[in-house]
Amino acid sequence: MEVLARLSAPLAAQLKLALAGDHSLTIVDDWSALLVAIRENPVDLVVLDPRTSGGLELGQARELLARHPTLPVVVYTTLAPDSMQATVMLAKLGVQDVVLRGFDDEPRRFRQMLSQLPASRLSHSVLQHVLPHLDDAPVLFVQAITRLFEAPQEFEDVHALALASGMTRRSLDRVFERSGLTSARTMILVARLTRAKHYMGDPEFLLEDIAKKLGYTSIRRFARQVRAATGMAPSTMRTAFTPEEFTSKMAEIVCKPDNDLDDGADDDD
Image 1 (cartoon, rainbow, N blue to C red):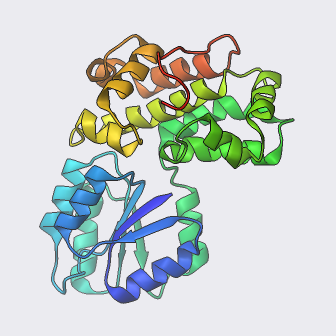
Image 2: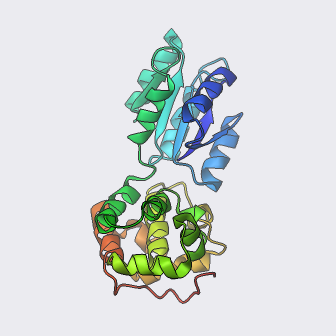
């Protein structure tokens, strides 16, 4: 999970200890840097303290929640009257998770909380259709597919998926075939577009932002893959499906071996 935080040094140090290398953590110094990082990079979770600068930053936190309604936000703060007041206000705006310094911020608590916050519930939903096909698949392969849906931007092409699976490209193709799934290339495409659909729920992100977050070198290739999977332009896909409809559409593609999509590009494009 890609975690972005705006915290004081003591809170940041405790959060780093809690994540213990299992998640990627980026600390930013100010609100403008936070907003730029959210727009330009894949971010799955924001952790913030509304008192980082020494005074309440409630207005900035409210702006963040308004601009990025699909992004999970966790408040990590100290027990003080003004911070509790700010936390109550932020809860009314949708913040559900609050961690207090010295009370419930031990590493186990943080890891448990993160495990209950899928990077994208939409990606998690599609993955749940894939996993039953992998009961007899090698453990590394299952881990690689899970990671693919958690962070599709990490997999540039099929060769990257094969490497993460500890296999040759040919062995990877055999596992996909035995599992009754679509091709590796189409699986990567679906993982990317599922995360793209999640990002599309955030009105602040331009289509160019979303393509960049997912590692596309051009908006044209992104649009080509959207059309291959849905028959639509990205701007149309943005509002065309409910989450349930999109999950069913993607699951139908990946869970049938004859549903290999041709996006007009080679694997290494």
